[in-house]
Length: 298
Image 1 (cartoon, one colour):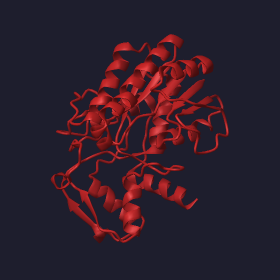
Image 2 (cartoon, rainbow, N blue to C red):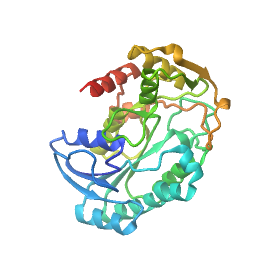
Image 3 (cartoon, rainbow, N blue to C red):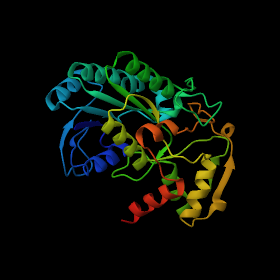
Image 4 (cartoon, rainbow, N blue to C red):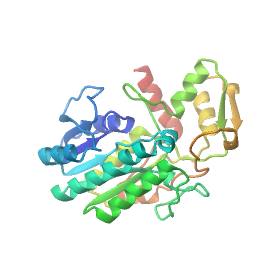
């Protein structure tokens, strides 16, 4: 099976490539809009800006993948709110290009989406929950989902939640690394206790993508961690795991933060469908912290 990954330099992209390089039956095609930030030990690499229709068509035509896993997106929620045109280009127009190329060359498309398509009034959520985004990032990701469902010949959407992990040349941090670094530097941090998520280890999400690719699964799947936690819970558990000073963590609520984009209060996912159909079984949050710690110490 030949699998093309978009967004290979991102956290999920890197974990996917690490995982797929270990699969003997996989031919790997890594793509990113700039050169790779880590060495590729198996497969081929192509520079690809998925917002460029000609580039998408050329790379797909030349590499002829069986499956494309689209991990590329603009995910900074506040930036998406402030730069809506750039967000739409990255998250919607790019998906239109991928869908057209996949249809033309008979490629199965696996697209990574988000819990931020939901309004946050209730959670955890299963795949039948009705989307209603509260910010532009969520709107863009929902628009991409609709394009895929309405126009793709063969597709799978994997929604995920609050991904954390360690990668090479990280352009963005994530909640676990931010808490760890802040506490190590003796900084007091304010962390909300009125939002709820199922934080996802990047390795678990990569495994979910691989399980879906292997089966050429179709439809929508929720792929996340299994522990339903507030960011404050995450911060406390992180402090305790790394034996850091948890008294530096102040609980607060969302009303105290003035951010350009609203956040849904409660999301998180029910994973029964992914477990049943794909055999997906994520680590606990503490097990995820152990994976992260081992990589930081390597």
